[in-house]
Length: 119
Image (tube, rainbow, N blue to C red; front, side, top):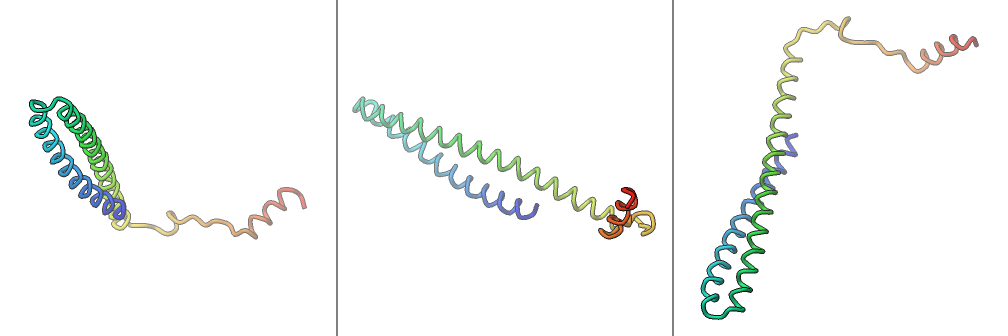
């Protein structure tokens, strides 16, 4: 669970940097679209198309970041449960006679099966 948390935190840092770049790109294309729409119609429409594409990529990055945050919260919760259960088991007085089950060896199990089959 700790490995997963480290990976997710790294992923979140990466997505955060990507989102910042995408936000900057959206604002640049918006500015270009505004400048060019009054001067040249065709160049302005291309800039608006690029702005829409950049916005789409930004939304995608934000969705990925949201998913990574959700997974990180789950991994952290799982880690807390594991630690809590380990502490619970460590603090619980155990009786080896009642808590440990003895399983038969393979040889003992084979002998039992032979007796049951009448051999």
